[in-house]
Image (cartoon, helix red, strand yellow):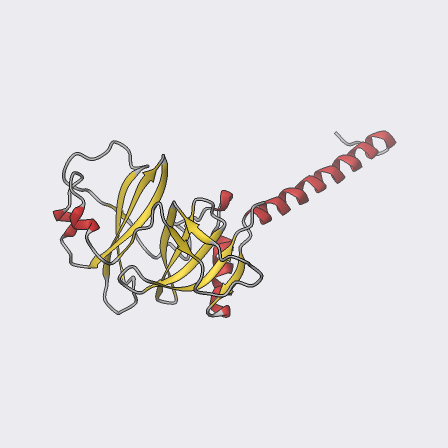
Length: 226
């Protein structure tokens, strides 16, 4: 405990305060670096800068998003109950659904997000249907073919998603998302976009969904490692 009038004690307290301040500053720098988001390429710079600001505020530790905060929170996901004998855990075998105008054509869609594991690590896919589709009544845990048959889907587990639609300065080879994917739709100014990343969480693609598994990339973001 610091006591006034004791030179040695006050020196120790001053030194302790200095070290504590240095520790706090270092901690804040590390925390900021761990969650920093950089804009690398854009179709619309003002829009992408706004996305960077929102993602920066949203991003949690280890470069993960909080889906209960903006801009992801306007979309409500509900667990899907399929007929048949399902797995005991949702970690590597989950289905969730949301009603959202994914392709911004003025009509609501039934969007089903699946999460299955590849070598023990989860990867997301999206399957898109008309809002009144009965596909989830037709599919079972033993037969997912009615769900998987749609041409409107993002299904890349084990594959790649090249970041080649927007020009990235000062790179010899365009980066790519690979193998394991995390995909999350979000809404900004009444327009639906999707955020794509992979297991490394270094690169983030912000895109519009165009039907038939096609996307129009809007922004390429990078989250440097700390």
